[in-house]
Image (cartoon, rainbow, N blue to C red; front, side):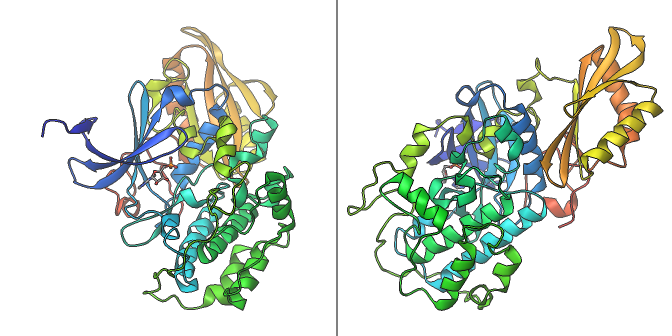
Length: 462
Ligand code: AMP
């Protein structure tokens, strides 16, 4: 058996599990522990583009915030010269939607998955993280039929990314995307995710999409008017819930707490409910057409046609990152002259603190513009005056990322200043320094055998 493929002396690579826009996914086994994992391999050349660093930084932070039984775990990230490897929790059951190729689900079976989906989404929203791209490919199952939402993290690239001109409506699959996202109005990430959950619920029980048309413009129109018809067997409670979720007006659309209070949601979950109704699937659910419906432009074609930066998902984006211990990939660009931390403080409080610390440390405040504070050491160092920028990025309304980047002077002096002065002085506003090689806190290690990600020093309470 001489043709085993071993990755980084740690994982034995097995069969091909799937293919995404930029990545191939393989089954693998951890050689030391025997744990089954999925490894997503991303070709760096394919995704190497300029101008994504801001989004990338946000994504890294976001991925670290999200740990939930129904969110696919990311165990570690590794890199070679040409590839980036994401070691993920293995979802043995594959895509949830493969199930409905065998027939639509009973309402009881759909309820169980829907509870898990809502639980994952609720958890992420409570952390200020929005998925924004919930769709069938992102719903996987483990070997106990538990739902695992993947790619939670396209998320916080909201408005600023639009101003960058990068975020287009195609960031989500159109059939699952909320009307306000399609119409490019400013949107609330939580409400947009809830809409997608509604479409997913409909598809699970109906076996076809609520909004579909051979003409894409017509499909957009139907979405914007929430024009759909529930199949007759749908219960009244389910119809009522869908009506509340698939509300084109996000301000009146059901919130998660309202969903949880609905009669359909509150019905008891039958543990043996995962039986599939053996009725043939009668239409489309992933942009595919049956013989009777042949879209002029299918969703998958649309995605291919516009497979630009805007279609990068969280993993694609992270693959460009300098976080997750990938510093060697970008050494020449950022190397050791960059420090980052996340904070729960609002922007004004962060700047107030930075100003206070600057005074305390006798740093000169050169100027403040566009959310960047330019700071300089009072005395000349080995390589001229040490200067650095403090820049604040909004990850989510309640979460900011602060980047301290050396722009002039000696790197060792800079590192020293960060370690001895800045870090202790900023202690009370910092939620987590990025890239700190702290071990995982006990309760988070449970179930994870590869606690190799540098983790925030403080994790949010579960
Ligand atoms: P993605 O690039 O995330 O869309 O992944 C492509 C496909 O690979 C998915 O649609 C799944 O079928 C499969 N896949 C991705 N991640 C996993 C995983 N963690 N476990 C099992 N299969 C996966």
